[in-house]
Amino acid sequence: MSGDNSFVVVANRLPVDLHGTTWTPSPGGLVAALSPVLERQQGCWVGWPGMPDEAPEPFRTDAGLLLHPVRLSQADFEGFYEGFSNASLWPLYHDLIVTPEYHRQWWAAYRDVNLRFAQEVAEVAAEGATVWVQDYQLQLVPGILRQLRPDLRIGFFLHIPFPCPDLFRQLPWRDEIIRGLLGADLIGFHLESSARNFLDLCSGTGQPATRRIDAHVTTGDGRRVGVGAFPISIDMNSLGEGEDGGVDKLRRELGDPTTVILGVDRLDYTKGILQRLLAFEELLEAGALEGAVLLQIATPSRERIDQYQVARSRVEEAVGRINGRFGSMGHPVVHYLHQSLPKNELRTYYEAADVMLVTPFKDGMNLVAKEYVACHPEGDGALVLSEFAGAAVELHQANLCNPFDLESIKRALLTAVQGLETTPELMAERMTAMHAQVRDHDVDRWASNFLSALEKSR
Ligand code: F6P
Image (cartoon, rainbow, N blue to C red):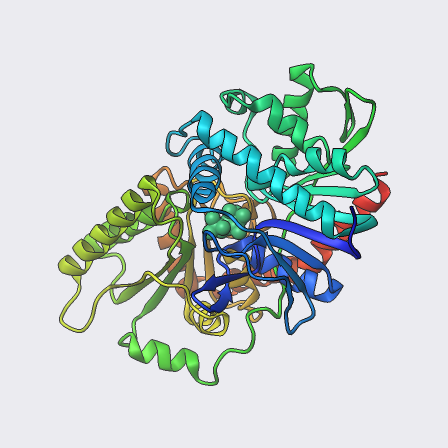
């Protein structure tokens, strides 16, 4: 059982989603980061096409990437994707921002779907191929693949945080997940802290990983599994060219505000969207942001899950209330879009924004912060960034805030707005330093660091 692809990526989603008969780019940072890398490698991508019960034939994209769709039934979608992945693992790995639910039938669906993904990969991967497994939805795939195809070189990368051992130990199927991950030759995390959590967990359980050797775990059967931190980044070119005059046009359309403040997120309760709206509201109330507008672009996400519906209605209620209080006819103070925008349009928003607000309670990395910085090579603009976003480790010159503390968000936002006015040279110095960091540590560097470590790991 083997195919002819020497490099295979497997992720829950394909880089494009099927909507009826048309394909559109999939949401999220994982796809944004990996698509350009895979296109350059002319690799094969195994994943779900984004609609239950659909499994189109494999096809090659214009960029030369081979897409191999995996079918999920409606029951798989509910148990594996909405259930175990996004209502058990997602809140657990994001430090219980909402309470995770654990259900045996969701776990059974997760196991089953992971098995099917592994079987599909086993069929398309060439003898001795490199397989790169992505993210929390597929943590059992490395272990299953190791059994099906011991000839493969297997890497695993987690795109979200890995929690501290005390939280992880809540999971009824914790041993199975660890065994699944340890099927890989190399396990990558964004941050040292996540890698450390994983190593601590392995050294604490006494099974199946028994010993820690620097950044390795030795499994019960004597294999050494590499563990490391590889902070993901962006492709500096992926946002395309901004429209000529687009920034001026946008600012005119917004009524020439004094300050444009921007948020861009999947509509997810981890992102702290409500908190930033509340901070903005309190500053308006205090008369501290005269003439400012806030643009919030919230991409629809996981819309049938209760906690996402609650998050959305709280955000939309706050948008309505703030506009009702502080807007005037034809001039809202919060412009809110619940849609996903094409990359080049997003670029115009990033360029037009004086201040970018990125306030997650917890985030693996947050590529929006890096995209904003990438769009400000001249050093204009300011980034307000949560201490709990992985990006804060590299972008420490941002105006950092604690999103659990409204006063901290207000302080960081106000300092950013005033800093642009009163100390523009200092602000430019900080933005330029962040720009250089993102430019010099792009997604290609992330992928090649991971893949060369994987190469050396066996
Ligand atoms: O980065 C985390 C992640 O869950 C990715 O795996 C995924 O591509 C993205 O967010 C979007 O989430 P979803 O696929 O559930 O829409």
